[in-house]
Image (cartoon, rainbow, N blue to C red; front, side, top):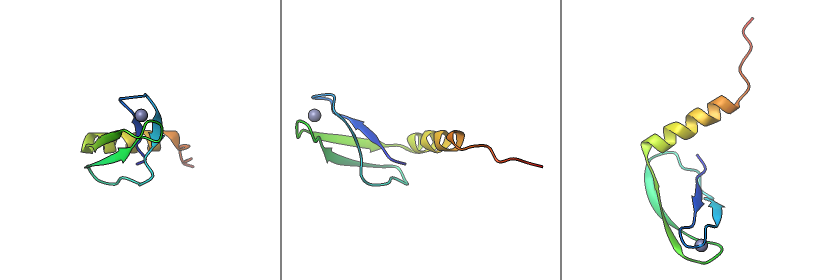
Amino acid sequence: MRAIVTCECCGHRQAVARSITRPTSFHVVCHSCEGVLRVEVTAADLHAAEATTRAARPAARVR
Ligand SMILES: [Zn+2]
């Protein structure tokens, strides 16, 4: 999944460059105010992202 992080200091939203495939936590630096943000990705987050991705795809046609 690709995480979108909202800065707690200035509200700037930014995409995390790395692709996340398992629960993890890491830090990113806000591009706007340069504050350090802690990002936590849980298994639930990953499942939710997976479900969203699946729903966005066109359904396969069955004949
Ligand atoms: Zn910021």
